[in-house]
Length: 478
View 1 (cartoon, rainbow, N blue to C red):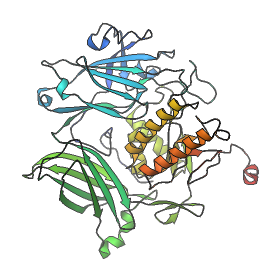
View 2: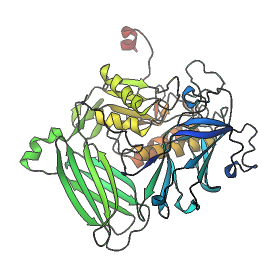
View 3: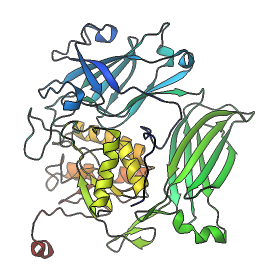
View 4: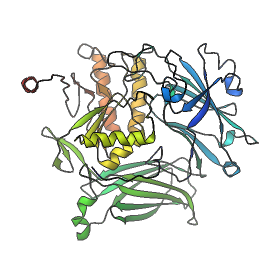
């Protein structure tokens, strides 16, 4: 495991960072809406209904939220005053949510800013145009999470009031970071790194949120991690909202000799840092973001997992990542790091995240410490056309969000036939499993995909068998 030192708090979106951002976690006003009357009574415009306080991002069922109510509350509301100073007025301002379980509606000063469905994936809204005169800018969030909807992707959240068997307490509402981010007039919206070990470089796709004026350029700088040294300094015209650029690292004799110091693997998790600047026609910096990627190649050949051309034995711990006092949410940012450190200290070289799309800061520490990750979706419990649509929408958003993490080496959309209980008898469900596989491969052809891990395999690059026998002899016989 790579040695790490205490550093500044990890950005909630570690692979596309701007220097200036405002953390909105902490104390919010809060209310249950058991009669689902808040919309009709326009709670997004007044404060009298908010009779409690909650500590965001901890769900109201959890002890750390300060609410700690384990009974059913399908609709909850949040409210707080935004810290908007004069410097932020008049410009573009993005409001980000890491995850809200399950449906979210967001208002700023009584005006609807955005809506989102999906309990594990991020969303944002531009709110600069919704600000009003004066110091008070009011943010209101309504979250709807039906605890008895078994079609909803929910992972290991139990549908009864008290947890039982292998299921845990529920998580309702906000459970990941909330933050504000000032944006320039044209902003870098997405980065997509695709490493190419054979050519010793990477392909980068940059997407902007608006069309750039003529003559604007993009500057890309890549830096080696140990020691930090410039590897690439590339500037090019950008003539639309999307640019794809191939960036090859130094192929000199000296670079070849230090190749191992640039490749990413558990034994040497080297990250290549990046700065991307959007420049106007005069060369002035319009936007500046920081990112990173890992130079590595993943293959499955002849029954072996191959990392950078080397057969690698996977020793993975199953990480369900529920905390007694905070449920799906981590009790602290440091706890995310500590989970990775503990897994490494026990001799594992990887983590299989189970029935959860994990916080990006957890994946950051896996990237930084060299822990291999199998990324899994939170599944539904039954099959229907609606259940299939909801999981598919959320899964594709997760693959897009986490594409850049070098630690992720395998995608697992379904586990042990959760949500497809009749796979052996239903052609419809088999078609659904195959579609998840092919859509995942279409979005990301660089990683193996296990469409349904565990017992029944309609299609996949790896066939995993989950066997809970306690006897080595029995395992060998099977």
